[in-house]
Length: 189
View 1: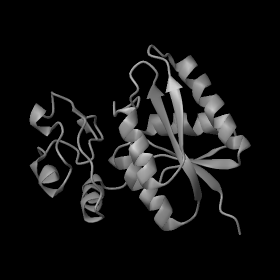
View 2: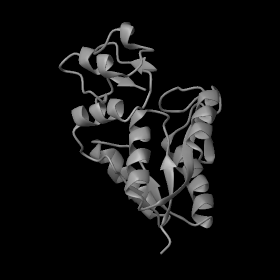
View 3: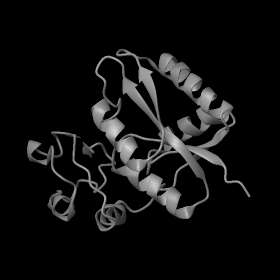
View 4: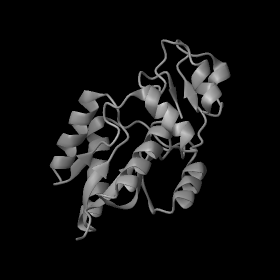
């Protein structure tokens, strides 16, 4: 039996890596590529600011085709939605039926994604949804993933956390009030 074709919504960070790993391990989908939004003006991943060159290297290392969606500098939701819709329509035409996300807790974002995808007859998949972030951080290290922090919220973490490798020492040094996976915007990887 053929597996449903899925696209991985790739941010370049740890949650995307863990979600992709979980989906590949479960083996329920044929992951046919990575989908990433890139700022036209800056050549960086829209959400995390990772350079496009590093994104290209990640995709090459993973071994999946990379689908870049270029987003204008001053984008509003209407333009963003239309741009993403065009990209997703092309993937649907190629047989994609599912879209995978690394989201953990933001219910409003999950609902937004599900609604937009349903308009295109796509099903959203959230393999990490509501998992314990301490356990996810431990899995990240135990499974040999490597990432660095690319930005921090200065109200929650000082600058010494920027550029640090996310290893066991990193997670152990996070203040108690900081979510291990940065789910409250404490940091991005």
